[in-house]
Image 1 (tube, rainbow, N blue to C red):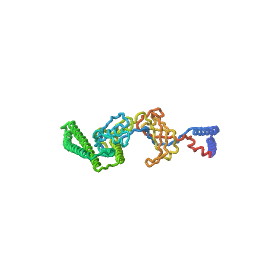
Image 2: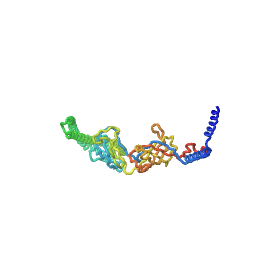
Image 3: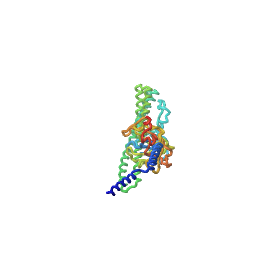
Image 4: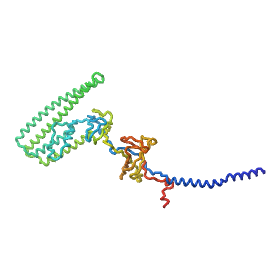
Length: 432
């Protein structure tokens, strides 16, 4: 019993000793804790943690390349350039197959472009020195020449009844020429049918290995030559028909003793010319690819050769601008976060395909912010442009290849906030 009481008394003494911290620990521990707290507070005041607006970025050249796609399914008539060839503004690159002669169309375009003005006196003297095969433009050209003839007649007013017989003889000569050309057309049509049948047979025999490719090609060339002759004959017939219509108009004018006024015919002639000009521009835009500026052309489509059929939307060519080009970044930031973004703010960019741990980040600067929003994929966004280093170099001094288009993630640093502000809020709250 005595031992138990003695043990309990000693246990209480031991517990009291163990439960009482040393005096030095109380003094120095409190001091150390206070110093640690002050140090953390001091560091949190000086350490800054930025506010950012994060979104994707598209990096491209300020003068982007122009890509050409097929507007509709059609055959390529000819490719006029080589891959990586230098081209000049307005140079023809590719021609699609039409019923028109490419050289004739381009010659007409050059002649119309070189006219000093579009006044009636200038248009009255506009002429072509040969028969042009213009396909769907042929009717517009004939209509212009018809109005031109009417204007010339109204301007001259020198008709006599004795001229009617001469004009009728001219009609007879023109009709004989038409009959001759129609006979040639009929003969050519028979030859085309015959050669087409021979071509089908030759192509079948070529697959069996009985004839050579040169024989098949020769037949194709014969058919192409005959078809071109047919187009020339058709254009010549149309010219003669136009001539006959013009002569008959003159005969009617002499017989009736009345003609349209000079101002009326002038107006109609100018209108016909402008219609021809608009139709020609639309034809060129649809069927002939033209370089929009000086630069280098690259053939990006597959099997882009003469005679190749392309589907609507197929990629064909791309023209790269000449000289040094500036890279820019394009962003579409959400409207809800756009208020914090200002020009000259720092932008940190991680480029896709160039790992951040190996290459680092590209440092840019907000150079432009749109004042107008737009809708993209049902989201309201604000367009932003970012100025980039030229050439493209990361903060670790590693180069990034200037490809035609890059993408990545961009962080716009809108403010540098102290770490303590993020914990306890802005000091303004306490000042209030």
